[in-house]
Length: 384
Image (tube, rainbow, N blue to C red):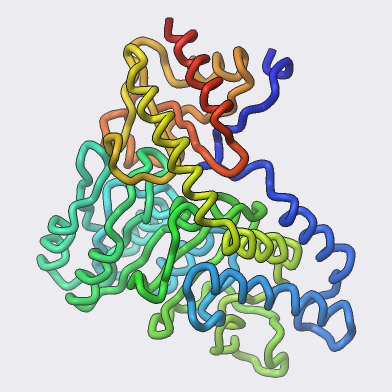
């Protein structure tokens, strides 16, 4: 049984685990020492909670290269952030250009908007899941376009998209650039002030190493989507209208103080050790990728070895189904992976695995060369 083996966690693309001790400690302190309602009072506990959230916002802005931390909005996660941007900025009659490798967090709200009259034009990625900027430019040139929407990196293929080039194209044609950064933030060193995105949605619990239930949205100073939720906040409680100033405009209701504390601690950790962590991720990912290619019957999705990718390696086998492989890996060696369509059927359709799905290894902080060696040996034994 899997319980007989130590857990070797290769599902970081779904959520990072275990959380760094700094993250856990910060969350415990937030609940034990700053348990008041942030921004709702002048007593010590309320002020402590407000300082915790402010410190987390400042730490995340510094990590992401955002000069004004008021442009960082805390959300319930990347999906909430994407919904805020799409539903707060698109109206019937608008046209958007989007890639064929988007996650359901983008696809589903877009299709809901399409039912209301938003035109969705899809640019197909290549067989490795990569977007061609020239194809996007041709699509944008066809007709007036409100937004270009693209993931920064794929949770299936690991492919990294040319966001800077796409942002230049969008702005040249009067469009905004909206990015799903769920798989990018943390795994890719970011300077959002230079990247060119008008909106960049982050998942707190993946590469950023924070807790589940919190995410962040960067909005460029000129981009002003309509808020989706109105309600109480730490600003002018006597006004009937929602505050117009950031971040209060987009953060109605009581903030997630423990979640922000954990995400802030993770951001500070990544500022200190991010280059080292990413270098290890790249090295282990390259080793896993290259040696999986040497196993009979294995196909590795995404860009070839030597081409940059985030730490995601998804495979299929010509005889064994992905769920069979996943079950055998856990039973044989305690390897925790994910099989299926990974909430991204558009991507699987693009790369030719819509009928089978794939087996995904998601690498992250805490994995070692020994873990990769065990995973590879288990794959060889299972296939043999």
